[in-house]
Image (tube, rainbow, N blue to C red):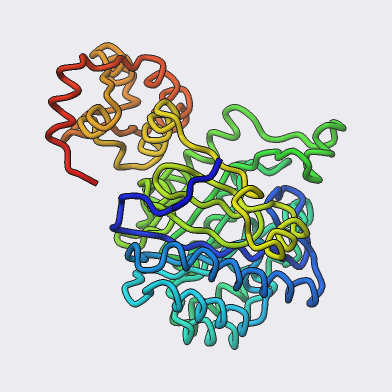
Amino acid sequence: MAAENPVQARPELLQLYIHVPFCEKKCHYCDFASWESPAVTQRKWFETALAEIEHSGKQWQGSREVRTVFFGGGTPSVVPVSYLDQILRKLKEFFDLSGVEEMTLEANPSSLTHDKLKAWRTLGFHRVSLGVQSFDTDELKLLGRVHSPEGAQAALELLTSESGLRFSGDLIFGIPGQTVDRFLTNLETLLQYRPNHVSFYGLTIEEGTEFDRLHKQGRLILPEGENYQAMYREGVALLSRHGLFRYEVSNFARPGQECLHNQGYWDDIPYLAFGPGAHGYDGVRRWMNPHDLEDYLRWGGEGFPDAMREWDALSADARLSETVSLGLRQAKGFHLADVERNHGVHWGESVFAKWEKAECLVRERGSVRLLDEGWPLLDEICADLLAHTKPMARTQASQISFGAKSM
């Protein structure tokens, strides 16, 4: 499904994402659009990405204020700095980047150097998100990572001592064979470098990955139950003692150091995304670019027709579901009156009272948010709230809607 003009009636903010689909080696758990590709293929992607930015930029030019820019992947740190430079130049032809508050680039330890850090800073990047995942040799080998523990520590030393950039460190927990103590040791090692942001994610088995193949053969067993929950719970507590506080279920930051780009996704800010498999959102619909690299290159060769994208016009139920789930996964929760007004629904007292009695959830200052006991039950609580929504009476809904701000 495609409409003639993707620009909707929300002229305030926009985020930009550039997907760099190349890696030194595909990790065993990764199902992202990424490949181990020679320089000639990288060049074709680069030329197509520039053309895509121009194609979309002509439709969106001047429509919104760009708040964040994020280069993700894949591994953006593996491509030449000149590619990043020219992509940013092309973006500036169509978008005003003068007010950008945050520009981030994902990197892996094995492709991070002093010269690259200096160049990224010159280009205007503010922060680096470093994919450490583990400091344990056996875990790194199992995950299919190309760096060593020593390589990760050397990269962190560069970021800490001479980069001039803020940085986030990413870790994975729930790795097969991992104990709670081993995960906490990984986290403590990362904390030695005083990151201002940390993300840690529970390992999941994604279809079509090497881990999926091993899991189906019974050769890969993930930690379960209390062991898995203890990794998360004790990891949250350790970060809190070091001044990094949970602001989203998997993301932790020192005050004022939250990732604005990711917050934008959770707070329903529209975004454009360039590259294979990249997802965009205009406030009403989502779309995905052709996923496979060859299909993406072919799409560019044919002039980027909308018919070759996958489109999803969000239904009222889908929008409500996203608002509740994305709100609850943030520490601030969601504003109850806003959700009821914008979606024309309300909740009876009993559905909240049940979770409040269990000390999983609280209503305060107009918001609904999770308490410590509620985070492990996030999915269950979301499902329960959504199952117990009630439509507002027509007169009540119209009165509330009349008083809402125009968007």
